[in-house]
Length: 173
Image (tube, rainbow, N blue to C red):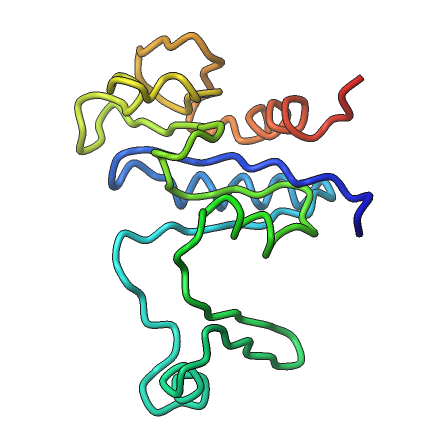
C-alpha cells in the first residue's frame, strides 16, 4: 500500500546480559495488547543456520537460490542472502507493521532505548561510550545514571510503551 507510512524503527540496546530480550518481550506484549502491530528484528553477531542440512529449504539454497520463502498454513519464513543496508531490509520485510523493535544493531543511527542494570555484568551503560548518546531516546534502568532523556524503571513497561506511542506512533501535526 503506497499510502501506508514507513513504520518507525526503535532499537533496544544494552551490553550483553542486560535484559534486552526480556524488555523487548514486555514491550511487544504491552504494545500489541493496545492494538499496535509490532514487528521485531533480532540482530545476531554470527552466522545462524535457519534451515538444516538436507531439508528442502537448505537444498534450495544449496542449489543457488538467493532467497527461499518457506510457507505453511500459519507461518512464513524468508531466508535470503544479506548484503544490504539493514534498515532497508527491515523496512522492506516489515513494512506492514506499525512499529519495528530491533534488538541490537546499536551502531546504526536509529533511535535507541538502552537497558542498563545496576547489578548487571557491566559497570557503565552504552550511552557513556563516545557517540552512543546521540541517538538515545530513553533509558530503562535501576541505576542512578541520569542521561538527558527520560528514564524508566525496569518494571515501568506501560510508561515506556506510552512514551513510544507518543514519540513514534501518534500522528504528527
